Every structure is written in C-alpha cells, then in structure tokens.
Length: 86
Image (cartoon, rainbow, N blue to C red; front, side):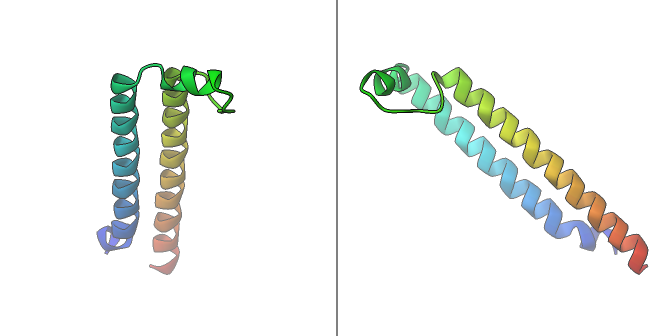
C-alpha cells in the first residue's frame, strides 16, 4: 500500500526533474549559440534580472533545490498520513 500512496509524488518529482533538465538543456544550447545574448540585451536597454548565463544557471540550480525540498516535504506528509490512517 505504501508504494501506491507515493505514486503521485514520484510522478510529480519525475515531471519536475524533467522540466528542470529541459530548461538546463535549453539554456546550454542558447549559451552555446548566442553567448553574448544577455549582454547584448542589457546593452540595448532591456532590464533583465541577471547579468550573464552563469547567474541564470545558478538561479535554476537554486530553484531545482527548492523544488526537491518541497518534494521531500510532500513525501514526509504522505508518510505521516499513511501512518495515521493505517
């Protein structure tokens, strides 16, 4: 019964990790094809929350870590509910 209770959480985790991997691949491709894109955008007057790709990649890593913490909390909540109900 425990694996069934965790199934939705595992699916959410898998989809989230796939999303973060896709964004990371997209950023890497963009960085490889247009390494000066962010600098050019800033020089053209666009207000961006980052100065370069490295800063953007660091933000993605932090967001991924926060997502994983949230998933751990979700797993723990499901486990506690399973114990209470059982």
